[in-house]
Length: 386
Image (cartoon, rainbow, N blue to C red):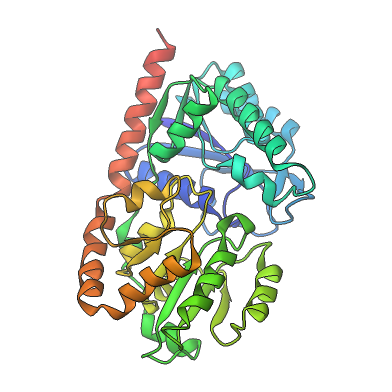
């Protein structure tokens, strides 16, 4: 099978969409399928650009990390792509990629599907705060409903996200298919070396957040929680790994909360052992995002043997719902801190949850998820050819 994917983001731009696309591309390619990706051109390139078509792009005013592809440059590819003998088009983002993907599908007479990666209803307000939140929610819901209606079928990463879209009135056929995890990728990494590199004593309790340092990730809540946790574990250290637009505000909050010396920002970590070492250097992974459609970082932490304390909102419900590899906590600083304290101080519980992590993460195999994706593609092709 030859799949044409279209996305407004991909590496070197780091986020969950890029990670999901990469995971599925690699698993599909390993199974003998070909995946061509249309994505923006950035100043940097990735190590492997095979079957990636980079499109000239410009800055996005509201988010300098992103790029906007020039849609006419994609349209010019039509005849070249016609010779590619594609079977299906898979859209990953709702901006230029959505409309370009739809137009290519019509011109090439191909079925078109999309993955609904981002919960825009909660996402938008963090970046457009001068407009009423209820109005933004209305716009996000109508926008999503309209775009989903354009598709032959839709992929959602979690059952919670499926219920959200059904609540919007989306009637497009949907399948729940989370991103798979290649556990071998997380076998590397030296946690002790990471602690030494950052001057963290071996006995110091470390809690960790990994992800885009953005407002929708609710990292400010984790800082408030850490301030509460210090009352019982005075030397606790929160490590924040990632980069993003909320960094300046979070540094200010660290000062307000009196957390200097108890929080370190280590920036973006490469997935070549550096990120894995960070996971393995940590005692507990903490997470409280309200907008995750899946929560892949929870599984990454578990694949490194690090237990998790997380809220169970939207996509993280599916990961945490089994009760394995960690504890669920409410979005309340004191109650969340209590769960982290319980895990850190109760050695029997900690050993139990740590022992659950690797086996549970393995149940989210990238190979199995890719097989399901191929079956989904074939079902859509059959449906559209009737």
